[in-house]
Length: 215
Image (cartoon, rainbow, N blue to C red; front, side, top):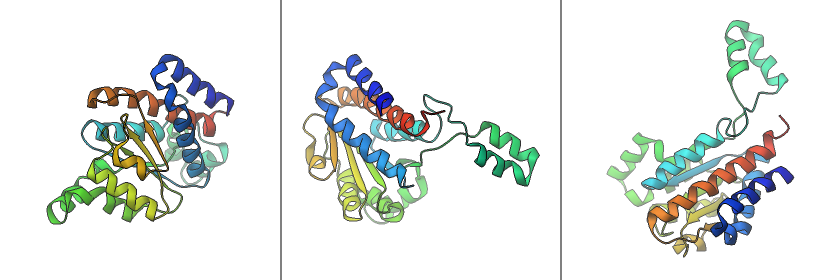
């Protein structure tokens, strides 16, 4: 925990404007740690630039971010046992993963549901399909009012999926629905997104430190 706290304090030193978000960042960290300790996964969604942020977060969680995350020897041995030629490559180069799925990247279900049913409910449909109690849904919306994120967060909580919101200053409707909402102190869309990036980078680094810091 000490090393993870160092990451948070470094964030707040570099971005003093985010100091008011400190407690909520810590709450989000605790939610993510509990999720991964129990073998669950994270589902992430946003629109436009926030969709790109959702993909970005997955990239930091699913492979080494600040650390290489070498596989445990037991896992390496299991991979090599069946076919040493193939297994050696896998065991050497694969890295520990923190399971995360960007709901924004699934083009076929996304476009099918938009075309056939209701565009505002696409992410909720994916939450229904993927979400299990103990999972986490991260919804990014600068206003806090994006309908597809609001519906997804509501359904997630209904299904026992923990919810983390990343929004601008007001938090919008999302702040009423999420277990924690990190409301960065900005109002315009680009300014909010500029502050979301260092927040989720710090969260990813903190969680990575928790699970792979001994490497």
